[in-house]
Structure formats: C-alpha cells, structure tokens
Amino acid sequence: MLAPMPSQPQSKHAHAHTVPRAAWVALALLTALNLLNYIDRYILPGVQPLVQREFHVSDERMGALTYAFFITYMLAAPLTGWLGDRFPRKPLLVLGALLWSAATLLTATVHSYAMLYLRHAIVGIGEASFGIFAPALLADFWPEEERNRILTIFYLALPVGAALGYVLGGTLGSAYGWRVPFYLCALPGIALAAAVFFWMREPQRGASEHLPATPSRATVAGLLRNRAYWTATLGMAMMVFSMGGISVWMPTFLYRNGHYSLPAANQLLGAITVVTGILGTWFGGWLAQRWLRHNAAALYLLSAWSVLLAIPAGVLTFFGPRAGMVAALAAAEFLLFLNTGPLNAAIVNAVGAPVRSTAIAIELFVIHALGDAPSPRIIGWVSDHSSLPMGLALTLVSMLLSGALLLWGARYAPPLELSDESVSRAAHS
Image (cartoon, rainbow, N blue to C red; front, side):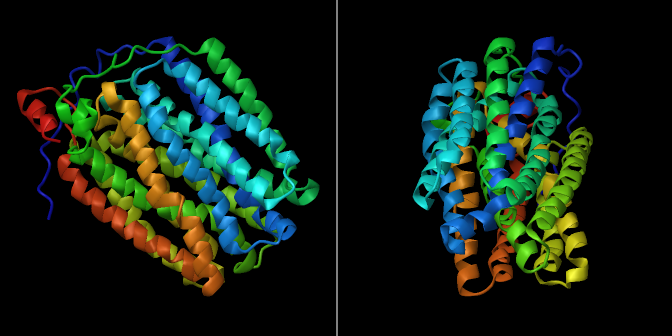
C-alpha cells in the first residue's frame, strides 16, 4: 500500500497571482493551433482504408506511417528542447507550425507509398516543436497550482481535433478522395501561425515559479534522479501506447469487426471521441483541481485510477458482443481522457523553468519511443498474423503498466506550497 500523502492546502500564492491579458491571448491562440495539430494527426486514420486500397499495402505498412511520423518527432525533440531553454520560444513555435502546415498542404503531390512515408516524417519535425514549446510557455504565465486547469483547457483540443480529423477524413475522403481533407487542415494552420507571430507575447521564463530550483528540478543532470518526473513520464508512455494504437486502428476495427461503412465508422468514432473527450478532459481536470486542495498526489492518483478502470471497458470493446461495442468504447475513452490535463500538469510541475523545455522534449521522446510510435505497427503485425482484436488487446497490458507506474509515482508528487517541510520534500522528489 502507498503511504498516505499529507494534506496540501492551497498555495498562499494562488490568490496573489494576477493573470495578464497576454496569458489568455496565448492560451486561446495555442489551443486553436493545438486543435489543428490533432486534426492533422487524425485525418490519416480516417482515410486509412482508402490509402491502403490505393497503394496496396499491408496493415503493418500502414502502421509504419505513424511510426515514421513519431521517429522524426522523437529525433527532433532533444534539439528542440535544448533550443527552447536557451532562445525565445515564439519564433521557434511559429516555424514549426509553418513546417507541418506546408508538409500537409503538399500531400496532394503524393502518389506513392514512399513519398507518403516521407511526408509523415517531415510533419513529425514540425509538430515536435509545438508539443514542446506550447506547454512550457503556458507554464510561465500560470503558477503550479493553476497549471492543471490551464493545461486541461489546452488539451481539450485533443479530443475535438481527433474527432474532426476522423470526420473530415472519413466523410470528405470517401466523397472527394483522401487528399482533400489534408488541404482543408493546412491553410488554417498557416493563418494561425501568423496570428501567433503578430499577437502573442513571449512570457518571462520562470515568471510564475514558486517551488525551489533544486538540482533535481532545475538541472539536466538532476532530471535523471527526479522520480516525480520519471514515474509520470513512463506512466504516460504506457498510456500513450494504448491510446496511440487505439486511435490509429479503431476506424478500421469498426469498419471490419463492427461492420460499419467507412464514413459511418469515422462519424461514429468522431462523435464518441468529441463527446467523451470534452466531458472526460473537463471532468478530470475539475476533479483533480478539487482533489489537489487536500492531496498533492491527486494528479498522479486520478491518472492511475482512470487508466486502470478503462481496462474492463477495453475488454468489452475488443471481445464483447457487437451490441455493446459502442457503449464500451465510449466508457473506455471517457476514462482515458480523464487524465489528459492532470498527467500533463504533473510532468510540467515536476521540473523547474530552467530545464522545462528540455524535460518536455525528453518526455516526448520517451512517450513516443515506448508508446504510439511502435504500437500501431506492432498491432498491425499481430493483426496480419492473428486478428485485429488480438492486436488491440496489447493496449490492455500497457494500461495496466501505466496504472501501476502512476500509483508508484504518487508518493513522489511535489508539494504546492512553500513551507520548510515542502521545500525539503521538493528537493528529494
């Protein structure tokens, strides 16, 4: 059993912190850009059977497209994180958004599997910069006790973007060809990148930090022994293995095993994702924010129990009767989305401002290297040799590992107030 965490009252800084208008402008613009980020990422699963039919490739090779995206995403992350801790992040963020939008726009020129593979690799470089800089930049506007709330808003773009990606991909792809949805996503991305450049202000690095800059929190070498950071990162990696594999293969699963048409499968999945994603992400952030008033480990504990409770719903989705498939899938998605804001906030709070971009870069490398980079391809390989439900069953094992890691990490959660006792705990977390 884990030792009970001491009660954590709200920080004395919570009411003293005044949020400037520039912070809300930044949150609005970055959330909108994050929405397009996830639309772009989930268009491919929506048109996957159409692409597969045109290029005559196996399930394993379709999974390899996502693998290519995340390989370049991961390789770009360390350099991106280093740059983000040493240079202004706004221009770097804008350049990344323009790169991924341009690569998306050029998808119309792709007429071979090899070029499609290359296209996905290029997009990964652009999206890596955004995924690193945006949370770190927002953390400099808000103090530790508010970041769960703010990152919950920021990551609401995930379910909405994923749902729109499925719907745009499946509906427009079936009607007009699979290239058309990529056009529609690219142009708003370029416009929003320009809006960020002209209207968003770069915050002072570390302006909202209240926890002490101990070696384990504020140096790259110290990250190696930062248990709060590593348990949250590895717990997220195992959860991302599950969510990445499910998100890529669920339209195909509903098409093959649920016997839906491709547009119907994507519309159904889009509706489930947007409803459960918004409700789950909002409710998880709200619940964690209330729980934090009494327990500093709330971000870890809520994330752990939500992913563990999703396992039975996943079993019913993959192996249960067709009549209960949709309800089980909705329950699983709702539970997995509960930890979107809390778990990302746990990682951001586990490190200090001097190395936050580097820490997020390492985290992104790890969660994709162990998570959604290999999972679509592995699931596709198992599907080729057995069945798609058996391939998807691997996600249930990774959910179990995720829950165990996060329960272990709860004992290392940093405090949210600055008493002498909490400074000592932060130094050893």
